[in-house]
Structure formats: structure tokens, C-alpha cells
Length: 192
Image (cartoon, rainbow, N blue to C red; front, side):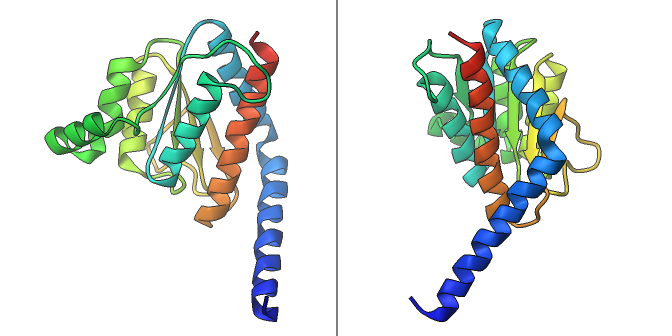
């Protein structure tokens, strides 16, 4: 490995560690509150609906896999759905109604009062994610937004906003993965 690439690797790890430390310092109460809300909803028989675009779509799918399968302990499967995983629904809605309505229409179909809707958007301004969160709030679901340092775009709201203190997409996504694993820790502690 060249000296330059070793230096680049070290810089990347150091930047990642800084984001993790800064996130712990600034987000601990919001992480705990969102984790408690998710665990309580699942204990009450509600479901988790997760969505995002690109890498955030895979994060949403990862969360759903942990809930349907297991995280660390064997427990009953928990109701959860990732909204970007059905190509027929995604392409139908995007084609017939526009990509900006992709999550909104699905949330309108699936969300019930007390459910948890998790919208992941590193920029905080993905129109389809914001509309999905708005539809969830309108339907009585508890909303969790995972974003980057910018938070949610002006006018957008969620019950729990976890704004990772970084503007680097990769580091934001790395923290989003940690967030979903922390939610799973809380769920494992609460659910048999």
C-alpha cells in the first residue's frame, strides 16, 4: 500500500470517528427517544414502515430485515415493510403519479395510527421522503427522520429528527446504520 493511500485511509477513519463522537454528544437523547418510541410501538402490535432513496433505501431494507428476522436474539418476527423493495409498486407509482409521490402513496395505504414511519434522507430534502413523512403524520403514525447536519428542509417536520452532524454522505450513511442498529438493541430489550 502506498504512503498516500495509507494516509487517506487514516484520514477517513479519523473523520468517521469524529462523526461518531459528535453524534453521541449531540444525538443521544434523540436516539433514546426514537428507540423507545419504536420499541413501544412494536410491543403494542404496531408496525415499522421504512423508506429512503439509493443507499438510504438499502438502509431501510436492512432495518426491516432485522425486525422481520432478528438482530441479536431470537424473538418473534416483527411487522415491518421497506417501501422501495417492490419494483412493480415503485415503477407503477413513479410512472403514473411521479417519483415525488412514491412513498406518500404507499404510506397512505399502509400506515395506521401508532405505527412508526422511518424516513432516511442524507440531504434532508428528498421530496418523496418528506412527502412520505408528512403522509405518515397525517395518518397518525409516529415519524422518525434520519438526516445529515442540515436536518429536514424548511417546512418539513417529524416527531423525532436525528440530524447526523456531518455533510459527508458516506459518514451520514455510516451513522444511519449505527442508528438503526441502536433501534434494534432497544427492540430486542423490549420484545420477547
